[in-house]
Length: 194
Image 1 (tube, helix red, strand yellow):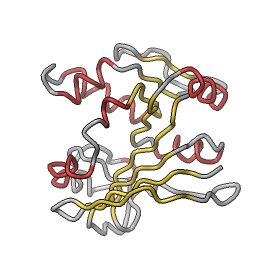
Image 2: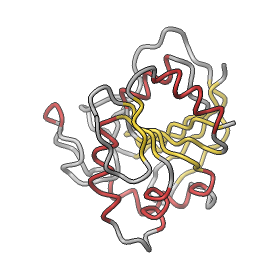
Image 3: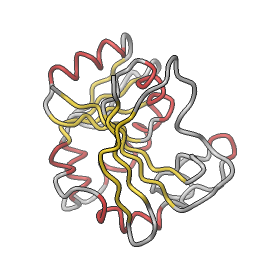
Image 4: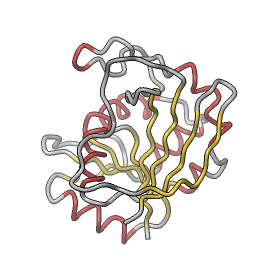
């Protein structure tokens, strides 16, 4: 049975901020891209060394998938993250994407909730959802998320996309671990209670 895990990088004021470049996401006039990048060098301090090994597949929204597809397949094979992401099965939820160029990708275009439920019964290990804010809100609303891993950087941006939105009902979380990097990023791991 697969465990659906949301993995998100946030600021203290709840803005989703990846570890990429200033041009990573400029949608809506966002001008603070790349501010999370300096914290990337210490993330290994708060992640289990077996983290990649536990991830059996990736589940992504279309926008996140397209950004990752433009980057990871072109990274050196000796980069362990690139090697893992390029070799691991990927699923992308999209109503508009018709062709997936990243090797090992399957498009989920209709009945996404049912497809994700089925995926959880057919794979072992973690199904990692990276970024994909709109998609994550849908997964939460459908009670499909089993675990949330938040990496909260010591930043206040004041503007930008927020990860969490309205839900049809409250979700109770059980705190499983808390850790901190040398640069002040706090890693929180929650189990989502049914």
